[in-house]
Length: 374
Image (cartoon, rainbow, N blue to C red; front, top):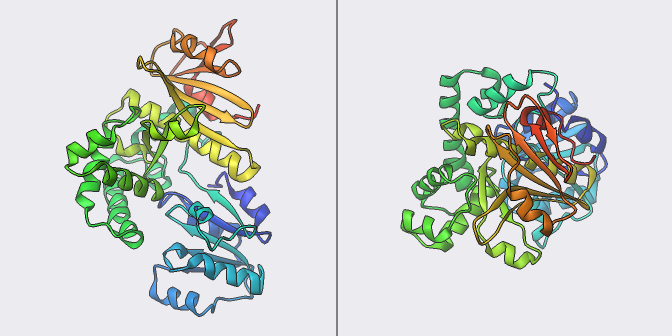
């Protein structure tokens, strides 16, 4: 199937180096190869391809050079910078990786001015629009997750076997390639604990006690899991950015299938994935500054998501069955008076709007037609 980044990537090929990152097996390599049949593909995980990369012996008659997992090469950014500065983009260069490539902005040997960054996410309701009816798409996403292979296979036994292999590769190959980590079993335990706390602000100290390690180790492992696209953090909104960083984040999984039972937390995770994906698209393709956060007060009252899209602000609550408007909108609206207020309800038969601007929308239809710029 044609992926949502296809046209944007094709438009920018040859203008800059393209960095395409995202979770392992989200479809990056397939997408890259579909951009041009006239490509040379080199995967740094393979010894033969590694030699070709190191000696810069790729086919320069091709229109596109795809360098997969290049981030595993020492000084890969300096390597790319040298190729770009000496040879330009003949052929066009697209670099894919299953770890976050955007961290190059925090390094000294910067590729500044030489690259465009894109982040490919798994399938969601919006990307499936027109291919599968909304209710069926939602059911399959909740059962199998949005990674193309298990989603398209649509078989629970296959999904379970795929998921076990998928996570094993991340923890026992990708992680060890990038980090000097000895406590893989502790990280596996951390993942199991995070599954039970989806949508809940986490406590580093509490997790450290459960795993019998230090809070510093927990923070380090969580950062690794973020960099490997296993989880992503949604942090609390605070006008003081420094204070917000110190507060407890919520963590969500890129793979919905990791969350076993069909619960409200799973539905919230699905919405988080859709919003996260859409905001990355707006940042990477349109250059709009975005943020995905949540709001919580000292009394424990909370709004699931607070979005900032340029100058626009939006409050979003997720409900699996409640049709009455959440009272939390009334609590937090005075603090963000410009924000729109939307409550998403699964399977809602009748949508409603109110004089104060609150809206109750059918979750499936709203996500399938998601447009945060209007």
